[in-house]
Amino acid sequence: MKGLRNGVAPGRFALGTVLVCVPLVLALLGPLLAGGPGPRAASFTLGAGHWLGTDFVGRDVGRQVLLGGRPVVAVAAAAAALAYLVALPVGLISALTHRRWLEDALMRPLDVLLAVPSLLMILLVASVFSPGATGLALLVALVNIPDAARIVRAAAADVAARPAVEALRMQGESWWRIAVVHVGRSILRPLAADAGVRLTGVLYLVATAAFLGIGVAPDAADWAVMVDRNRTGLFVQPWAVVVPALLIVALTTGCNLLFDAALTRTRAHVHVDVRAVEGRMKEPRP
Image (cartoon, rainbow, N blue to C red):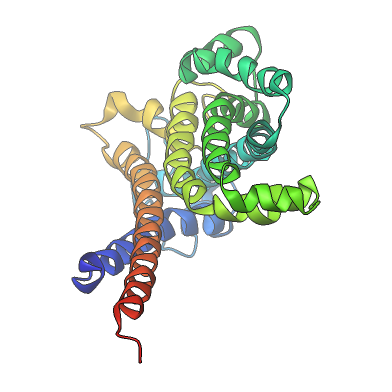
């Protein structure tokens, strides 16, 4: 409550919203504003001329910035969604099953993947295959599944151990209803906290892989590729490096702030409800 009274959570939420909206708007609307290729592309709606200058081969940096956000955001969002699409059922089944062999069959292979550093796994696979944007999304999702599944399993196991879940089993409730309606709803808060951190990690992995040339062409319009491609001329043309780097940092930082502020507000409201109940319990009875 103290944080909410002092405006910490609203301020954090507002700052996170601004930091997320700027790169997201550029990523979603940038290709529409950039116009088509050729000399006329310099006179798009944001203003005429090379407003951020040109890179080392004469490409308009402003246009590259407008075109380079969508690949980063699309691959990161797809990778995070795919990771949870697999991790949620695996974690729930492992937490709610009474068959130890099924839990081992689901979780032990993931433990092997968890032992290998994420970026190393991506580099090893990329050294054998040449993944495109779809392949990069699958790779990033794959390395995030083990950790996400363990978090889902831990949160679901804590809820599954409560007497209410056992009572539902004794009443003959279906496994699907117990897993989705009761357990799934009860683990939304820890999953939201994990989603904020995981999305930041996914963005970092996607940007790092693109920086290393994995999943994208060396001449692609991509924020991470722009940083790598123009870093040698940082002191000659800094905007070609600074602007895309700041947009990536703003997106990752803003996501963290938004999820953190949302969780802070949720915890505060829960705390208020608990104190209200305790106050009513202490009131003298007639």
